[in-house]
Image (cartoon, rainbow, N blue to C red; front, side, top):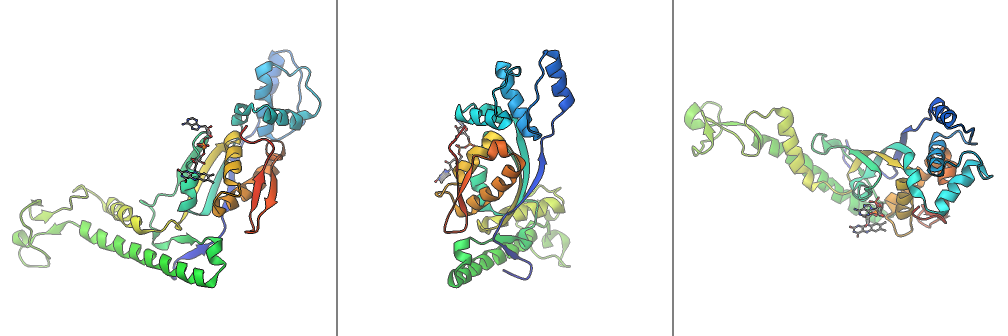
Length: 294
Ligand SMILES: Cc1cc2nc3c(=O)[nH]c(=O)nc-3n(C[C@H](O)[C@H](O)[C@H](O)COP(=O)(O)OP(=O)(O)OC[C@H]3O[C@@H](n4cnc5c(N)ncnc54)[C@H](O)[C@@H]3O)c2cc1C
């Protein structure tokens, strides 16, 4: 958009953490209760959810055939989804728009969020996320670039202008002509210095910048790129994949569900393997499952 800004069209998803199983603790529990049981998966999330489910009925002694996959499929069938809340993943997601995160944070139960602050972080080097339908068409792309550039430049100018207004000003009446700039009315003048009513008198440079950025960001577009760390459990993730991976969902967030499902299916086929992808003309895929909202 300008020399220091960049356009992004796809999210980057970093799997920051996932569970580990403390096998000796599970073995100790089994020994304490006189049962021998071993599941056939090494994925911690799958062992933990199966263990949690089996504790409900103490069904370790005579497991039905089919191993962990069959057990977790049964949980999906009977929608005993609270068991899936024991499995969690943490993703760091970048290259997504504020539009997307506004939709993402509507998902409440079972989610934790930490998002880049537009009050602390200077957006004068922001990236912008361009919707595919616009990027695909030169005429729409030109219109979009123009709008984003306009907003971006307004933000940069506003930050500087607000910063200046927030500086304490010395009054000519008290300090004489010198290098001072204005004559105050007397109101708010403390020993010849007038402070902005929008900032405490003892505010430091960081506080001043934050005050400027938080007001100037009001002109930034929804397309502004953001970064967010999310931790969510398997039940919450499944609900998210179903709602936001639907054909009716916004394409940018559907694109994100496609990437997250790739990671989750590779990591835990027994918890997420039931999802199928139906390719859509826009290049994303609709996610479907026979087990909706477990
Ligand atoms: C295609 C699409 C279009 C949308 N359009 C709009 C729109 O125009 N305007 C708008 O405001 N939103 C819109 N949304 C957002 C939608 O209304 C939900 O806020 C969002 O999808 C989160 O869904 P949820 O509440 O089921 O999920 P979560 O908050 O993750 O909750 C998961 C489940 O937990 C239970 N739950 C959570 N909190 C409560 C609670 N407080 N009380 C009782 N049960 C609870 C519910 O069973 C819920 O389904 C849209 C979503 C989609 C997918």
